[in-house]
Structure formats: C-alpha cells, structure tokens
Image (cartoon, rainbow, N blue to C red; front, top):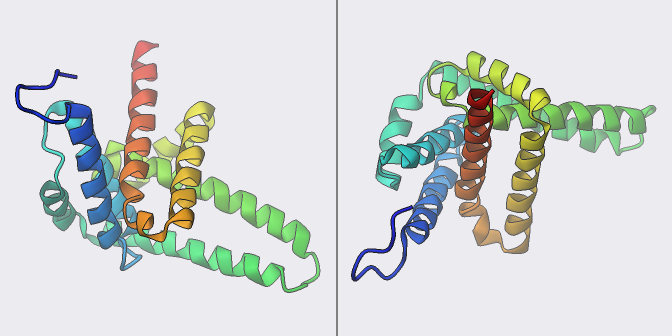
Length: 196
C-alpha cells in the first residue's frame, strides 16, 4: 500500500476500512427486502474486489452496480436464500417434540450449514455478477477443495453475528467486513490456483 501523503491524517488502510463500512451500510439497507440479499452481498464483494484494481470503493459505486443487478436471476437467488428461512422454521418445529426430532435437527442443520457456506462463497465469486449457476458450481468445488477458506468464511459469519449480537447497531455495518472476508477468501483461492 502507498504511504501516507502530506497532510493526510489517516493512511490508505484506514481509508479502505471506512470504505468497507460505508459499503456495509449500503448493503444492509439493500438487504432489507430480504429477496435482494444475495445480489446485495455479491455487489458488495464486487465493489471491494475493485479496490485491488484502483477502482473507487464508494457507496455511490455500490448503488450504481446494484441497480444493474436487480434482474430475474438475482431475484431467483434471493428466493432460494429465503427458502433457508423455511429450514429455520423446520428446526424450530423439531424442538416442539416431534418423533425423530433430534436426528432430523442434526441432519437439517448440517445441510443448511453447507448450503449457507456454498451460498456465501458464491457471493464472493466474480461470476455471481452475471451467472449464479456458475458461481454456485465454483463455490461448491471451492468449499470442498479449500477447507481453510471455508473455515475462514465460517469464522467471518460467526464474527459478524457476534458483533451484531453484542451491539445491535453493528448489524448494519457487519455486511461490509463480511463481504471483505468473502472477497479475500475468493482472491486467496484464485491466487493459490494460479500458483499451481
């Protein structure tokens, strides 16, 4: 990273941190309709990936990119993500004392966790901007082949959830660092593939 310029109070890393938080706030607002969650998170990852190519990381660029994203494929991805809420409802019903509930709860939680991991990793892939199917296929391969990256994604989600639980207003900033983590995991995986 370049050094601090004369008269600059904070260095470029602090500027990137501020940009991540502004993109996170814009992402949180864009996620409010729920069906837009995958498109909003994928757009945040794309904007943050642009920082490596000297593109501006601003909420304005985020909004401009998101406007182009609200098409049928993105809304279908959002509908699939909303189906995850049905899984949460099933898990709640399993605790009501239904027969076979403990085994069902373990199986449903494992399937839901794996699906969430692949979904999050697909948001971090550049293909998600144009082709969700290719992004999901690539994320599925990466989730198995790159267990370290998958563990980093789980840790990023856990950190975002913990921050939101500890201080509720942080829930509106958490999507930015989460998107940064998803992007970093994908860039890390891509660099490892190019080295081999």
